[in-house]
Amino acid sequence: MPALENTFLFAEPLKHYLEYASVVLHQIVEANKHSGQTIIELIGDDATPDNALKQLQNTNPIVFSMTGHGNETTTSLECTAVLVNTESPQLSLLKGRVVSLVSCLTAQQLGPAIIDAGATAYLGYKENFWFFIGDAAGTTRAVQSPFLAAFQFEASLLQGKSVADARKDQLAKYDEEIAYWMSGAGKNDVNSMELSRILEMNKAVSVFLGEGYITPSPGPTVLTAGANSIPFALAGVLLGIAIYREIVA
Amino acid sequence: MSKDLVQKWYEHLPNQERELPLILLDGIVYTPTTAYNEVMRDSPVGIRLQALIEQGKFGTSTEDEQAIAKTRLEQWLSTQPDKPLFATLSNKVFTPSQLLEEIQSGTPIGEQWKNNEINHMRNLMHLR
Image (cartoon, rainbow over all chains, first blue to last red):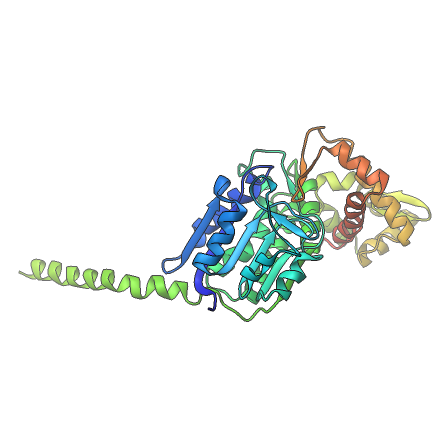
């Protein structure tokens, strides 16, 4: 059965400094989701491998996006519990899906294994993914910036863009964040040196594999502005007519 | 050849970057500030530095690039507060001094930072 359009599964663990990533991913989901989309977010203690694999099976999402600690062959969720490695039979659960792993090093072996298992696309990192922890998670642009760039891919998919366009948007967001810290308003911030370098490194090691032509959430804007808003539009017209009649009478 | 371009380049640089070694000429390493001062006073070396800045080059061999990159990272990281500032999604956390040790020991993590620093230097040279 093909993966379900407009269905997104996000895994957002919080421990071992992962709150720095998950707080931003959650905000991005909230800001970009549309009616007509099915959004499943496994947050904190719910972001276990068991739950993620069950949700992949039961909800059959077209997009699976997660953050977690990883290495060349493996990625993990809450408390560094392993989700899959290159030998896992569960890789078959990723078939037909767009898979985004904001996790270190997985592009070396796990990413290609995910594509070999039949995933439509994979986005990840071939070296270490760096982030800044000098402030509390989610509180400053410095701690958010690496993840604002990384999760632009998810933001654009939720907005209804194709995988290829979402990847373009992500690379452009990397450039925008780098420019902010190197020559923009943030260039003399006390943390600008850290952030410009972190973003440059993450962009340089970001890897996309697979096909870009798929649009996982076609027409979310149409759904919002179209079908769902017709009753409201009709009600508005009728109310206007009623008010007009009252005034004329 | 225009001093305006050098002036604009210098003004675009973040303040902290202006004091880190960047351009190598005849075995001497210049920070953006020292290079800018030489250009502005029309010294013979200033004219040659201006040409390098206009071309966006820092005038070095690969070996020199590595050495300057390492020096820049040492100079910067040694002035940072020694508390955890950097983390990776491979469950590692570093203070600036721990990161400096990685760079000085030439570990894969240190090499990632050093190689990136060379790209960073190129990006700085191309700021306009």
